Length: 235
Image (cartoon, rainbow, N blue to C red; front, top):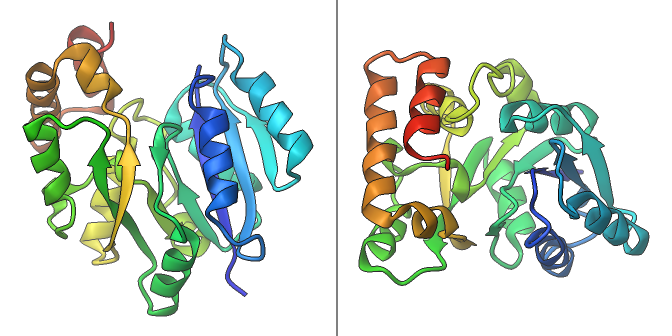
């Protein structure tokens, strides 16, 4: 029987993590979910305490620890996962009701990896337009905020997330999947936070995201991409 391991990397996500865990429990079928693994990268807020509180009320939730870095954290989660399907989810992204069954249905059809379409929790016209484009299968419309399901077997064949990437790790794996023609977009909507756009500025952040994408296309190294991110986005 197909089972899904949900893997959530966290770093100072006390504001969102309990709401997300409750959302996942309320919108999944217990027999489909192997576990929900929160992999903390060294939070200095109440993230770990809140996860431990949730664990007391639901044994499906597990807590793991890793050095900081989403690629490292997600690989750590994959190592301890018992499900044959991995579902990587950001702490501020809320998948649609019955998302677990949608994933199972795709895997049964032979689609071994993919994501959901996305909607930002901000009504700015550009973010609404960007969200609308995520329903299409074009590579340029992909990103980690849309979440990522992949069979455990295929994930291992690809070597997991490349831990050289501090940013762009989701896109690196997606590129490998597109190269293998192993990607499907489930036409159901996941809602994600626009908090980074709101903090940095919508046009400024979009410009820098495009710049990172082009730099990678032109051959920039993982370290060069991270240096650009630190200089222009992280504050």
